[in-house]
Image (cartoon, rainbow, N blue to C red; front, side, top):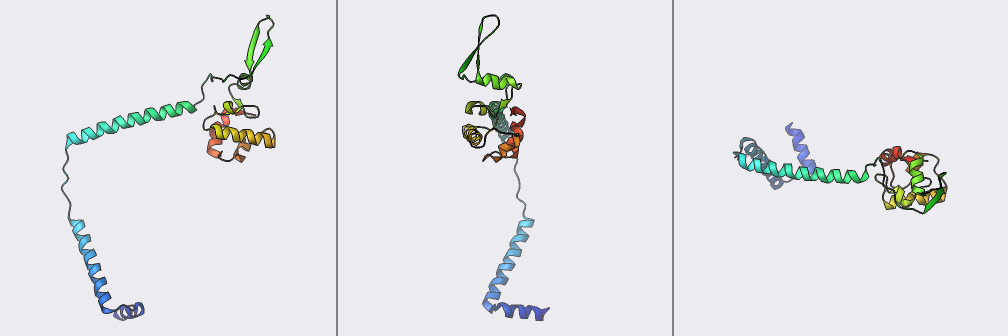
Length: 175
């Protein structure tokens, strides 16, 4: 063993002063590790201080939860969506009354509250969770370049729309 160690030292070309320095560093490392393992500082606990910290934590958690719910409320589909005003089309009913319907109402009510991605405007597309103005414009640009969507999975071809976002909006759209 001594012989192998000697040849290792010779190969590394470590001189005597470097060996002493490495040995001292190694010894001080062992000494500090031993002191750290044996020394255990006394922990002082003050119940009132921790109760105060817990109150602050619970209050901040409650506020964060409220903010989280507010953010989610913006993206959850409403059972009766508020429709933006669009160019009205006038249709006459059999009782000689005039019924005003917008294009967006027809899109939404035709398919039970789903948004038709082949005919929807940018504002209507923004009603989908996770779809903002940029994504809505990308969907419209893709539709203008490639024609109507033939499957919902074609939304994956739009930059920024991945599997997770598609799974979120898939039940809310129609073709």
